[in-house]
Length: 221
Image (tube, one colour):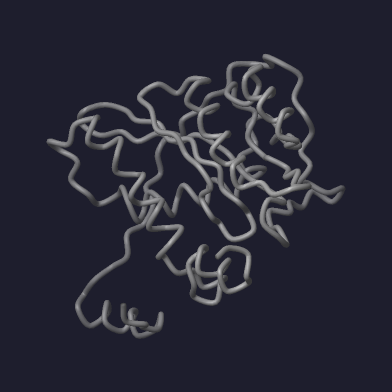
């Protein structure tokens, strides 16, 4: 691996006539199906309407959402759990059906990261996935504190929206998915997330990956 500065990369791209991928505006997938169960409040929004998406330590604040990928072979849905401390994707599930089983299956994997005394807030939109008994039960059993966006207010979950935007720019947009089967595609985000956590550097982490950052702080071996 060779360390290269951001502005060096910009200069090379300009000289070679390269341009970064940009997000495409698409109709966002929505899982809202009405007020299935009572929704908890938005614990990240203060009295002045500002949102706090940052965390001072791991397992303080998690975010969750579902996004959709459309390829010629069909639709695939992704449900990750992301730690706001450093953007680490803790767990994720991928399915062709955006149902409760898909969302619920991502949560136990994230809970394996919990240490003694950890009770993170887990923030989501008001989608039905996060209103069904299975999700609520897993949260209660693991001491997770639920928080939800207001109905139809995407800025309330802007941190996860931004995560999905970066994911699709780096992994999805600009690629030719013709000939890729659903079965083949389902395995591809897994490799991206492992690369994202272990290798991909972030400027707000002193140009280290989330796992490198945690090792530097002595949080993991």
